[in-house]
Length: 306
Image (cartoon, rainbow, N blue to C red; front, side):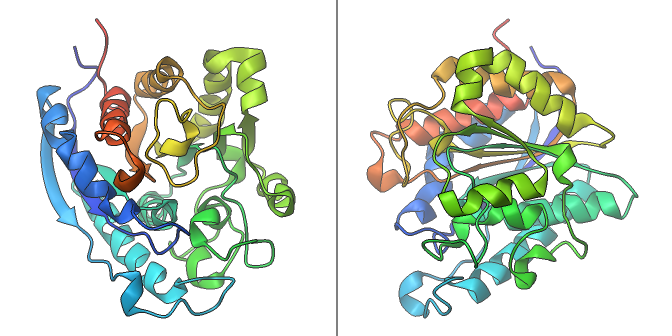
């Protein structure tokens, strides 16, 4: 049973330049092997697949600034992605973006934000992640841009990326939440607080449960907004459920906790775009992680148990 039939455009972004470990560039293929298009069609959605954004490989480029590795290349990919996402929304389609490392969120969110800004609307964000992703060039210990996209989306960081939507911030911290934190760099903690985002750690989930945490997260993201963007890093899951990620951290979501979060978002009727990132097939077991990502996409787009 579906809450709502939707028109969906799937797009892949085989980018691993933002990560310190190779392999997530194969993520879009892994999701497609996991049947993402077919599963969405089985729900009754009108699905088209736009293919993959063209991305160079690391061996053909120099990393450049050690505090912003592959900045030029990542900015180019995110700029193209933002146009594709905005175009899908203009055609009244839901963009489903398959990563790739989490730096692609800069492009996805830029497109979503620009679309709504032109209509004088606000957009909300619910971000699932084990990590803060709130570093800036001043705080990053690695220079990997996949550790920066949340800060950039909320107005902190490199000008070449922070202004990609044409306005800053792309999303206001008061209308955003990050869920699942359990591995935050000491240097980025102040950035998390500075953005004003609602930050929910695994201690919060232990104490309150996923239902209460998601009610708070959704309240923020739905407050005065025309829609909610959902960005899901599969390392938010416990590695027992999602072994194929580059930066696994013990103590993450269980299978049912993740599905409950997605189902609650679907129940709002306000999800306008979705991205699923950081699956690394090299590290996975029989495509387990990508198949879980596909299941979570179907849950946030309306799949119900009964």
